[in-house]
Image 1 (tube, helix red, strand yellow):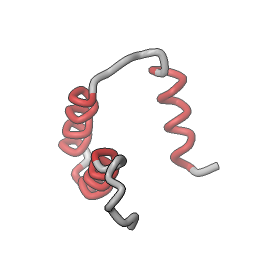
Image 2 (cartoon, rainbow, N blue to C red; image 1 turned 90 degrees about the vertical axis):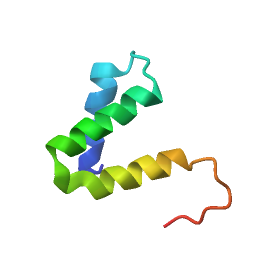
Image 3 (spheres, rainbow, N blue to C red; image 1 turned 45 degrees about the horizontal axis):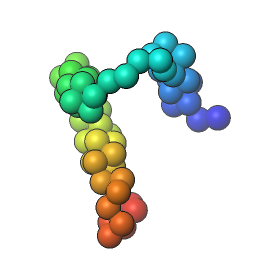
Length: 61
């Protein structure tokens, strides 16, 4: 189990029944980076990865 799995499991436990829009998620990403600017690059990479999931032509990094 990765360390991040605990956070993901907590998210599912606490909010797994909720429905949210991608707009809501994007706003939470922005808020998080405003509070934790050191995480700007990982958040940007996650957002880009999520945005391009259906792009078959993209090579995985």
